[in-house]
Image 1 (spheres, rainbow, N blue to C red):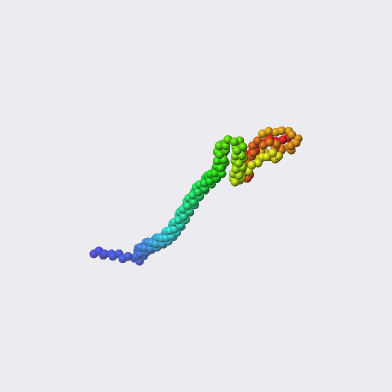
Image 2 (image 1 turned 90 degrees about the vertical axis):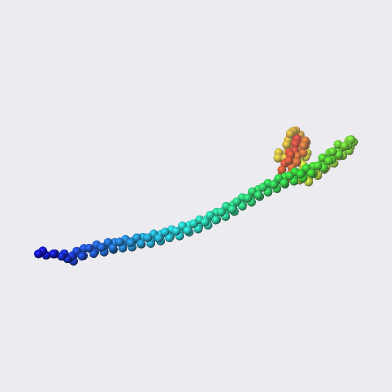
Length: 201
């Protein structure tokens, strides 16, 4: 009769299996905890980045709005300057046209007097008419602020006179104007026409 042997696990065998399972569970738990922790850190970083992006987008919108406002202000200023430039040019042209018209209006009475003088046949009347025309011419020039210069006895000034002839005469001073061929005219400091003269010595 054969005896059946029943194997009874020893204490050492039990101890070998259980710690392996516990170690695997612990390792899994550690990994899960680490993953959870890492996920938490990642979520925090993500939230911080999202907040930073939102902040930067808000600042960018503000800067865009400021830039648009500045562009608008610049365009308005440019338009105002362009309008001012056109207005100034128009006013300048208007001033020139008005001054031109005023000058011509002042000269017209002289032309009227010349036309009247043409109708005279008597020499004395013609002479009298010419004298009147010369007088009215001087009045017109005076109204426009124009004055004549260059008279006998004046001292030659190259800034005002144009000497076309020269004589040696001890009776006259050096540079004295002895003859005026054509009077000069000026308005303020502006020379309109140089006087054409003859000088002495």
